[in-house]
Image (cartoon, rainbow over all chains, first blue to last red):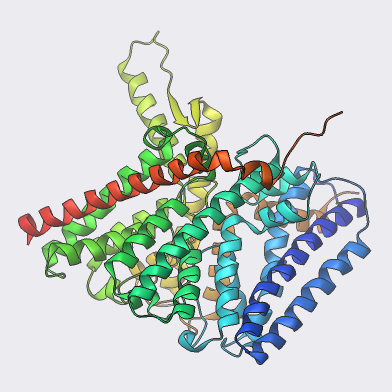
Length: 501
Length: 50
């Protein structure tokens, strides 16, 4: 029996969703300051309008939804998914007002792509957008990688027991420290430390490559944000190919793989548990699947003779595969080269890497390494059971921060989410094929959107059908929040209409 | 009652930074090992399959 939500439920959801929207408005102050610094007065006006809209909405809901009630589990899930939806609608204002988007739908596509750390974009003439809008695009992806709810948890939710429920609703379920607000702060500490180190390394490299210092700094910061958040945005239409530098590429590889690690793994390593990196089921799974997909693509491209020497082959293959597997979306080849040069085997290897994706509780998307590890362990456990005597008790465990005994509940949850991802990948592929795109290319683009990767083989353009844009927006949203909180939002809407009083 | 300390200032105490730096270096070493493995694959691939 579905119960219709009561007024108190609407109030508590409205109150906390409003807080997240206020957080989005406050985040826009950073690109506003960048625009003022560079004297981009049109962009300043765009951000003033957008900030005002967020604050009016956010504080308006605070006034209308006054309640002392705390969040329960379903509230937390609805707030998480609802906040992402509203943050996309309002966060698209600066994009749309810039005049670089074909429509408001395109602007929402780009913003959802940023929040979900996907990296596909429909923005036009990207090489000539303002510094302020570039700052906003990359900040979106950096904030989205942390989780916009994590931002709100850090600054606006202090002392709220129900905050953990919103945090889980955003697809993060690890407590690095006993308190969820402290966990959010630890996540920030890791990310900000990497931000300083990574930006500095990229800045020095960019400067030595001939960029003028101010531009080298901003590009370094934005490329860091794109890599760490596994977002894949870059300030140039040629993405990181623009730099033509082995050093720049190597630094990007380090940042995007580190960004794809579970925050619990970071915290374990940072607090002295160094062996965790070779014992953790996610890093083992990642190392195996990345090496295998790299081997397949290396074989295919060496056999086809696409690249002249080992260094070029290594640079092109490993960069795209690491980018795909971490769900970053950085590339050092042209989008159509996936089709014209890499061929079916290269495309399939990249698709497998993107579909598996990064670690749970990271900035990345996809099925996740921990689920691959759990399902592999469960499969091997079943094989061992079959070849063992009937009376034998066969137990399996996996290591993630601590040893965990594998039980049916864990395997069932992993299988459910994996099936949901595969269904979503299939749906996006079929819809693309129905619109006349080649099935393999359509599957590549669909997996890229649903796993929040952002590599493109050329389908994602402003001229693509509007329904596919809408489908990709939902695929990015579902993939990032790992289905449950979006389903909770749909369930809430259904309960409002059909639930019993 | 003595309030428990929490917040960024506890996490960012100077004595904690050597541990944090060690963690970052471990992560970087692991990633560079995977990168070196991929380079080895490319060298063998060019020698064998091309």
